[in-house]
Length: 547
Image 1 (tube, one colour):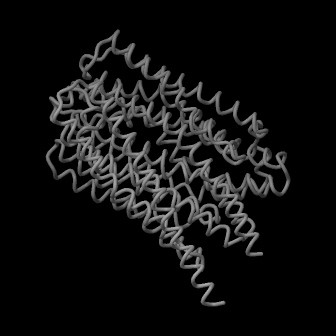
Image 2: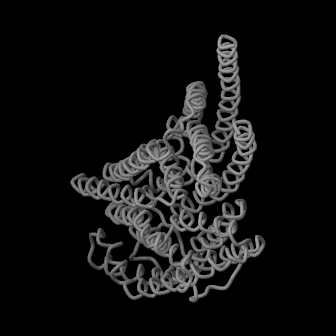
Image 3: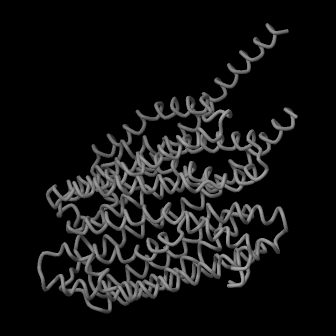
């Protein structure tokens, strides 16, 4: 029995690593284009109040979808689909997906319509920080138009995530992780062409209606193409089905729906907190760009490191929980957590030391003139820490959802929202400049850290007596991270003493980062082998003494 368990663990480890690399690789490309999208929008729209309003409007459909389900959809639905396939095959899984899809799309359509009705009120919240009344009134009109154009994306994002869930449940991760590349590659040229035709750096008084129509329409068209790709991927794994309202008579569909309703707060509270932070950042000219870029960098790094592992390990954790196999569940959890830490630590070192260089590469001269480069550099340093916290928090939530425990993640999100609201309110006492933006980012990290602490504490109790953390892997990762600190510092120092353009600096930073990560991998492998060899020697000695 022991030998069988060891064999299973050995077979699962490379599979988890391979799936994690697949998710990380495709997500890396997706997130690189995502950061590029934010940078291009910042370059074209500039440090203006219109940029604040449009950038928040652009994110609004995804935030609203997150209020409905968001990332919780995968955490709840993937274990249910895995169990359905095990019990009744793909036909039963399609029934579950069809019933949940019909219920969820109906809600998404209703919420999208409500968002369009409330668009003037939403637009006002995005422009209340504009000091001039006439400019504020025009900003409200432009933002209302943008919200009307973007609101249908709530339904489109629902379709995207349903397709993603179906593919991940079948162990397919490439298309779900990389399909957003197409969305970004459509929107980026759209923004560039719009800036070329209408002009750049326009504030609410100068922005023509045509610019809003092009940006809003182009964004919705890009999401529509992403929907088509995800539905094609769902068909490929044999789980494409028509949404159906007959699922209300299916006990399993009703159970999944109830769990989704119960779990809404897990995603809704963070989404509400982000909207609050964006609205408060809008009180600083160009402030939404700083806060949004920081948030995007945190998510991008987390998705190519910690969250990539979390997405890859969730189906395995769900199967182990379904079989009530505590040993396999604990083994998968330790492997997943080890991979999260191993993947996140070099990013923490590299970005933390080179935060100033990163800010200079990502922001345009307009933000330098607006005295926002310094605050953005500080925020990039905070993002280095934030991506590690986000990755650990996410894999902890995934593990709890695999055990059908949605109560603890709900409580953690609610407490985190309270922490963010209190901290953000204090930020209003600060001057309306870069210091307020840095404080808002710190408020976000404080909430994420609080939620992660609650989740991990509860999970540690749930998996006992299994070990919670593989200390040898953590020790090896820490040694490798310390080894690359001088190299990361050398990248920063070398770039500071040379006078070069943005393209040359970006190329140099990319090459330096590749060297740093390469050294990290080599040191990690060497230390891991040394620790493993020492452990085997000690084990052999103990066995000899016992014998």
